[in-house]
Image 1: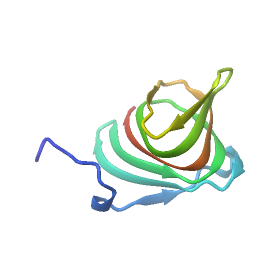
Image 2: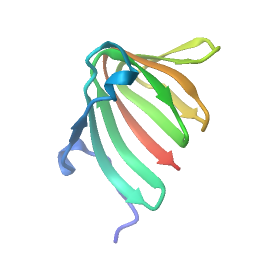
Image 3: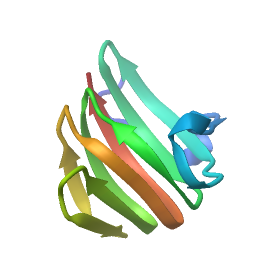
Length: 113
């Protein structure tokens, strides 16, 4: 096993899904995930979504780097955070709010449950 892993969408098959309809507030967002690494409770890869708004509820840690597109992440009782290419951020367990994809957004992610 090599200790270096390049994240490249061409090297893994995509998984396509949608958020639970009860969580969707607007649009018909389609999520595509390229999972490059799964080790115990650690997951890393790339994720893309198409426009829409849905409720989110995080029970895990997630590090994110936005590669393209624009999304707005709003925590309940907090300010809206507009996210565009080049932005990096950390979502802590317990985050509840909404994810709004304004235009198709692609991100790198690392999740630790």
